[in-house]
Every structure is written in C-alpha cells, then in structure tokens.
Length: 367
Image (cartoon, rainbow, N blue to C red; front, top):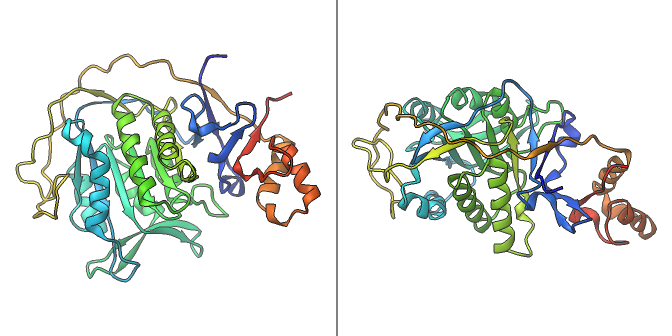
C-alpha cells in the first residue's frame, strides 16, 4: 500500500527496551526502517491524554543548556556552543528559530530560565549516565562551587516538564537513553515523557561532533518545514547517513514520543527574532562569549489559527513473534556463535548466510 507506517514500539520490558531497535532492518527493501520517513521507528509511551499540536508564531524558541562541572571530564563550552549555533545558523538568520543560551549551569539557573520562557525546545549538551544504585538515569549539572551535581531523571522532569509550551527536549548526553533493569521509566528520556513532555530525543551511544551537528541541523529544519517529529527525526537520520556513508551513528538518537500523531507544532510565519531588550542570557549565534543578563519575561504571543494538519501516517504495532525473540537473543551474543550457527542466524534474520545480522534486525510480513 502507499500509506506511510509509523512503527510504534510499546516496550514494557526493560531488557527489550535496552535493545537498539533503531537498527530494525527490512530485508525485502534492503534498508533500515528508520531511515525512511515512511517507516519511522518510535518508542511510544502511553501515559495519558494525547497531545495536540501547539500553535506558535515564529521564531521557535530554543533554550540551550551546557553543563561542564569542574570535577568531570571538561567540555569546551565555547566550542560546544559554536557547534549548536552552526547547526542552527540558517534558521536563526531566517527568523525561524531563536537560540538563547542559559548562563549558568545549576538547577536554580534552569528553574529560573524555565519560569521566564516560554521555550518550545530545550537542547542539553553535557554529561549524563545511569545511577545503578538508584536504578535511575541522571544528567550532571553544577553546584554553586562549580563541582558536579547529579540531577536524577525524576527531578529533571519536575524542573522542566510542567511547561505547556515546551514540546521537545534533546539530550545530547552519553548514555542518556539507556533504561534501568528495574523500571522502564527510569531513564532520563522516559521520565520526561512520563511527566508529560510530548517528545524527547536522547542518545543511546556516544555521538561524534560531526554527526551531532548534522542531526541537529536537519532535525530543526524539518520541524520548521512542518514535518511531524518522527518524520523530522527520520530526515535527520538520513542526513547523518548521507554525510558519513560508512557510519552507523544515524541509529544513535532515540525518539521517545507521547504525542499520538507526532505533530508538536503548527508554526505560523513571524518576524525575524529581535534582540531581547534586557536578556540575562546571550542570544545566538555570537562569535565569542557575550555579557550575560537574565532572560526577560515575555507575554504570550498571539496564537494564529492552526492550519489544517496533513493526515497522519497509519500506525502499526507489532507483537514480538517467536522468531523475532530468537533473533534478538542471537544479536546480543553474536561473536560466540560457531560458523554453522551463524548460517542459521543469518537466515533467521533475513540476512545473507553467515553475514553479521547486527547490521539490522530483519522484519518479515506476518504469516
């Protein structure tokens, strides 16, 4: 059929959720599913009422947060800012996106900035990980003295999620998409979605600067063009793939979604973003660090009538068949299989005999 299919994964088991489903492979079409906007792969959490698109007038306001505590591996803050700014420079020039950097890196700075929004996107760059003792994801902000302060996933959700205008959080932090063994909601991304965020993108592996820049640039451009978030993520994956054909980093981002049809915004044209009269944070893109001031409280922008959305893609929810379960077991321990078992595994996964099936989990039509 010609209809697009959104592959929506309901993964209540933490062991299954930890698998890299973004590498699902369609042997019939000889391609990875999530590289096409017709078959986006979404990790869906059914945690409440559906989310309607937010009508906003351009620019889309992005709050950039970079945290580099003094007692953790240092980040080049200026360089990290430049990378995000380079990714968004074209959209900023056109007045479609306004990027504002948080000055400071404590939870109090974040709380103050969220209060003085509105913000439509939060883009975090920094350290993240998993606290095995608490079985919960964390990101690392700084304390008042500059040393590391762990912010647990639940606390981060309390800090930023209760904002009506906030539609997307992008976590560019190592291990920020990994769930705990005990609770499907224990990862940072899932905690934010459970709290009410329509969409969160997190990285399940470390990502190179080149891939992160290309992904962010293409993602925001696609959102500005009116694509739903799952389609925009597929476009961004495709851009990473085309920019570095031999890299598999297009599978690193993980999309966690609560919005049923994937539409986060209905963006109406607006005027190019003007400098804030008394901003406590620097507006992007500055060539060098600028003086900082606190963000100005803004009145709600006039909400234009939302344009009629295009039909959303059909949704397919598949249960795990026994063959798929066997395939997943093979994927987790491929190197230890003897050659004759690898031949069987290749056939099971829709791969060529003996080929490493981790290039993708094969899907075949039911029946």
